[in-house]
Image 1 (cartoon, rainbow, N blue to C red):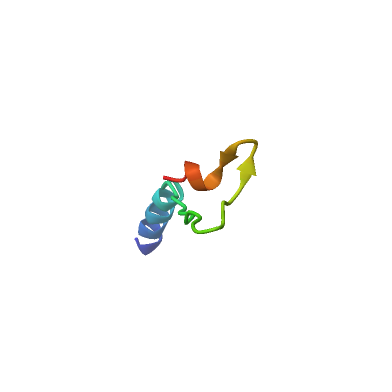
Image 2: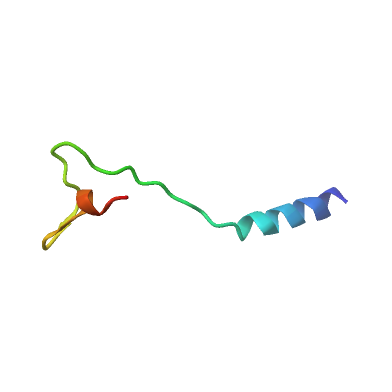
Length: 44
């Protein structure tokens, strides 16, 4: 029974969405720049 519970919990956790947070840049650090686009101005 414990194995079945473990199997069910493991299978659901592998389907979960993963959210990664990348802190924005500030001060004199503009972050990545591509053409005229600056990461520091695109960050939410």
